Length: 206
Image (cartoon, rainbow, N blue to C red; front, side, top):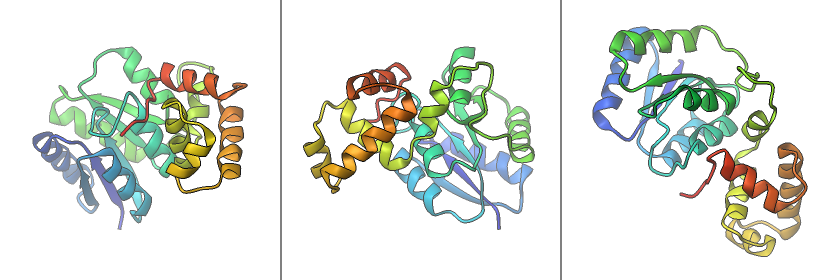
Protein backbone atom coordinates (compact mmCIF):
# COMPACT_ATOMS: atom_id res chain seq x y z
CA UNK A 1 0.00 0.00 0.00
CA UNK A 2 1.45 3.35 -1.00
CA UNK A 3 0.72 6.36 1.18
CA UNK A 4 0.43 10.07 0.36
CA UNK A 5 0.57 12.67 3.15
CA UNK A 6 -1.39 15.93 2.83
CA UNK A 7 -0.27 18.60 5.29
CA UNK A 8 -2.49 21.69 5.14
CA UNK A 9 -4.44 23.51 7.85
CA UNK A 10 -7.30 24.64 5.56
CA UNK A 11 -9.98 21.88 5.52
CA UNK A 12 -11.57 22.97 2.24
CA UNK A 13 -8.29 23.09 0.33
CA UNK A 14 -7.26 19.83 1.95
CA UNK A 15 -10.42 18.30 0.48
CA UNK A 16 -9.42 19.59 -2.95
CA UNK A 17 -6.00 17.96 -2.56
CA UNK A 18 -7.62 14.70 -1.45
CA UNK A 19 -9.79 14.78 -4.58
CA UNK A 20 -6.78 15.44 -6.80
CA UNK A 21 -4.75 12.65 -5.19
CA UNK A 22 -7.64 10.17 -5.42
CA UNK A 23 -7.90 10.84 -9.15
CA UNK A 24 -4.16 10.49 -9.80
CA UNK A 25 -3.50 7.61 -7.39
CA UNK A 26 -6.84 5.98 -6.54
CA UNK A 27 -5.11 3.05 -4.82
CA UNK A 28 -3.14 5.24 -2.39
CA UNK A 29 -3.87 5.63 1.30
CA UNK A 30 -4.23 9.34 2.12
CA UNK A 31 -3.12 10.80 5.46
CA UNK A 32 -4.33 14.30 6.41
CA UNK A 33 -2.68 16.60 8.97
CA UNK A 34 -3.27 20.23 9.91
CA UNK A 35 -0.10 21.16 11.80
CA UNK A 36 3.63 20.77 11.16
CA UNK A 37 4.08 18.67 14.32
CA UNK A 38 1.33 16.25 13.20
CA UNK A 39 2.82 16.11 9.69
CA UNK A 40 6.29 15.29 11.04
CA UNK A 41 4.86 12.58 13.28
CA UNK A 42 2.89 11.07 10.39
CA UNK A 43 5.87 11.23 8.04
CA UNK A 44 8.13 9.48 10.53
CA UNK A 45 5.80 6.50 10.95
CA UNK A 46 3.93 6.17 7.63
CA UNK A 47 4.60 2.99 5.70
CA UNK A 48 4.97 3.11 1.93
CA UNK A 49 5.12 6.92 1.92
CA UNK A 50 5.45 8.05 -1.70
CA UNK A 51 4.70 11.78 -1.60
CA UNK A 52 4.16 14.69 0.81
CA UNK A 53 1.94 17.64 -0.17
CA UNK A 54 2.94 20.49 2.13
CA UNK A 55 1.48 23.93 2.84
CA UNK A 56 4.32 26.32 3.76
CA UNK A 57 2.21 28.34 6.22
CA UNK A 58 0.83 25.66 8.52
CA UNK A 59 0.70 26.14 12.31
CA UNK A 60 4.15 25.37 13.71
CA UNK A 61 5.99 26.41 10.54
CA UNK A 62 8.16 29.50 10.16
CA UNK A 63 9.50 30.39 6.74
CA UNK A 64 10.62 27.20 5.05
CA UNK A 65 10.99 25.18 8.25
CA UNK A 66 8.26 22.75 7.23
CA UNK A 67 10.24 21.59 4.21
CA UNK A 68 13.42 21.22 6.25
CA UNK A 69 11.66 19.30 9.02
CA UNK A 70 9.82 16.84 6.77
CA UNK A 71 12.82 16.39 4.48
CA UNK A 72 14.89 15.54 7.56
CA UNK A 73 12.28 12.98 8.66
CA UNK A 74 12.02 11.27 5.26
CA UNK A 75 14.77 12.46 2.88
CA UNK A 76 13.85 9.80 0.31
CA UNK A 77 10.22 11.01 -0.07
CA UNK A 78 9.47 13.81 -2.56
CA UNK A 79 7.81 16.94 -1.14
CA UNK A 80 5.46 18.98 -3.33
CA UNK A 81 4.91 22.42 -1.80
CA UNK A 82 1.40 23.84 -2.20
CA UNK A 83 1.22 27.43 -1.03
CA UNK A 84 -0.45 30.80 -1.44
CA UNK A 85 3.00 32.44 -1.38
CA UNK A 86 3.76 34.16 -4.66
CA UNK A 87 6.89 34.63 -6.72
CA UNK A 88 9.54 32.60 -8.49
CA UNK A 89 11.98 33.20 -5.63
CA UNK A 90 9.71 31.35 -3.19
CA UNK A 91 9.43 28.38 -5.53
CA UNK A 92 13.20 28.31 -6.05
CA UNK A 93 13.93 28.46 -2.31
CA UNK A 94 11.45 25.62 -1.73
CA UNK A 95 13.22 23.46 -4.32
CA UNK A 96 16.67 24.25 -2.92
CA UNK A 97 15.57 23.15 0.55
CA UNK A 98 14.38 19.73 -0.60
CA UNK A 99 11.04 20.17 -2.42
CA UNK A 100 10.60 18.57 -5.85
CA UNK A 101 8.12 21.19 -6.97
CA UNK A 102 6.00 24.21 -6.07
CA UNK A 103 2.30 24.65 -6.73
CA UNK A 104 0.22 27.80 -6.20
CA UNK A 105 -3.05 27.44 -4.30
CA UNK A 106 -4.65 29.43 -7.11
CA UNK A 107 -4.03 26.51 -9.49
CA UNK A 108 -7.04 24.71 -10.96
CA UNK A 109 -7.69 21.04 -10.23
CA UNK A 110 -6.19 19.85 -13.53
CA UNK A 111 -2.93 21.68 -12.79
CA UNK A 112 -2.81 20.24 -9.27
CA UNK A 113 -3.41 16.73 -10.59
CA UNK A 114 -0.68 17.13 -13.21
CA UNK A 115 1.83 18.32 -10.58
CA UNK A 116 1.00 15.37 -8.31
CA UNK A 117 1.40 12.95 -11.22
CA UNK A 118 4.81 14.44 -12.07
CA UNK A 119 5.96 14.24 -8.45
CA UNK A 120 4.88 10.60 -8.23
CA UNK A 121 6.30 9.68 -11.61
CA UNK A 122 9.82 11.01 -11.39
CA UNK A 123 11.73 11.10 -8.13
CA UNK A 124 14.82 13.17 -8.69
CA UNK A 125 16.99 13.32 -5.54
CA UNK A 126 15.51 16.04 -3.37
CA UNK A 127 18.94 17.38 -2.48
CA UNK A 128 20.08 17.76 -6.10
CA UNK A 129 20.99 21.35 -7.04
CA UNK A 130 18.14 23.05 -8.88
CA UNK A 131 18.93 26.30 -10.66
CA UNK A 132 21.91 27.28 -8.52
CA UNK A 133 25.19 25.64 -7.55
CA UNK A 134 25.25 27.20 -4.08
CA UNK A 135 25.51 24.36 -1.54
CA UNK A 136 24.07 26.02 1.54
CA UNK A 137 20.35 25.17 1.15
CA UNK A 138 21.18 21.54 0.45
CA UNK A 139 23.31 21.46 3.61
CA UNK A 140 20.36 22.75 5.64
CA UNK A 141 18.13 20.10 4.04
CA UNK A 142 20.65 17.48 5.20
CA UNK A 143 20.17 18.24 8.91
CA UNK A 144 18.46 15.51 10.94
CA UNK A 145 15.30 16.21 12.99
CA UNK A 146 17.36 16.31 16.20
CA UNK A 147 19.89 18.70 14.64
CA UNK A 148 17.03 20.95 13.53
CA UNK A 149 15.67 20.99 17.08
CA UNK A 150 19.11 21.90 18.43
CA UNK A 151 19.42 24.65 15.81
CA UNK A 152 16.01 26.01 16.83
CA UNK A 153 17.26 26.29 20.42
CA UNK A 154 20.40 28.06 19.21
CA UNK A 155 18.25 30.55 17.29
CA UNK A 156 16.45 31.22 20.58
CA UNK A 157 19.84 32.15 22.09
CA UNK A 158 20.09 29.23 24.51
CA UNK A 159 23.37 27.86 25.84
CA UNK A 160 24.39 24.19 25.57
CA UNK A 161 23.35 23.53 29.18
CA UNK A 162 19.87 24.93 28.55
CA UNK A 163 19.53 23.02 25.27
CA UNK A 164 20.58 19.79 26.98
CA UNK A 165 17.91 20.30 29.64
CA UNK A 166 15.16 21.23 27.15
CA UNK A 167 15.88 18.32 24.79
CA UNK A 168 16.69 15.75 27.50
CA UNK A 169 20.22 15.00 26.31
CA UNK A 170 23.72 15.47 27.70
CA UNK A 171 25.81 18.58 27.08
CA UNK A 172 28.33 16.39 25.27
CA UNK A 173 25.59 15.27 22.87
CA UNK A 174 24.56 18.87 22.28
CA UNK A 175 28.18 19.81 21.52
CA UNK A 176 28.47 16.90 19.10
CA UNK A 177 25.30 18.00 17.31
CA UNK A 178 26.56 21.58 17.15
CA UNK A 179 29.85 20.42 15.61
CA UNK A 180 27.93 18.53 12.94
CA UNK A 181 25.51 21.42 12.32
CA UNK A 182 28.35 23.92 11.85
CA UNK A 183 30.16 21.54 9.52
CA UNK A 184 27.04 21.00 7.42
CA UNK A 185 26.30 24.73 7.26
CA UNK A 186 29.92 25.62 6.57
CA UNK A 187 30.16 28.08 9.48
CA UNK A 188 32.65 28.54 12.31
CA UNK A 189 30.46 29.22 15.34
CA UNK A 190 26.92 29.01 16.71
CA UNK A 191 26.19 32.69 16.03
CA UNK A 192 26.93 32.21 12.35
CA UNK A 193 24.77 29.06 12.35
CA UNK A 194 21.83 31.01 13.79
CA UNK A 195 22.31 33.83 11.26
CA UNK A 196 22.39 31.37 8.37
CA UNK A 197 19.21 29.66 9.59
CA UNK A 198 17.41 33.00 9.95
CA UNK A 199 18.57 34.20 6.53
CA UNK A 200 16.90 31.15 4.97
CA UNK A 201 13.66 31.71 6.84
CA UNK A 202 14.30 28.76 9.15
CA UNK A 203 13.17 30.24 12.45
CA UNK A 204 12.05 26.86 13.73
CA UNK A 205 9.86 28.02 16.59
CA UNK A 206 6.67 26.08 17.26
